[in-house]
Length: 64
Image 1 (cartoon, helix red, strand yellow):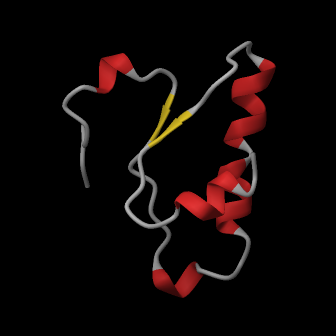
Image 2 (cartoon, rainbow, N blue to C red; image 1 turned 180 degrees about the horizontal axis):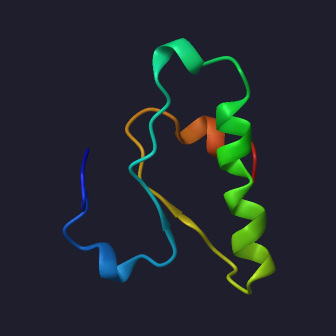
């Protein structure tokens, strides 16, 4: 587990990072529920949400 995975985190707010779904839970809609964070961020007045990911960029990009 990482407390802070991005040294320059302060530049990017709000930041979605350090999310992980265990393999045995994948394919059960966990990512879809996590992506609802995007809606919450919009509701509280942010126009952008920064994402730190190694290999799921397309997944989140396709969800706005």
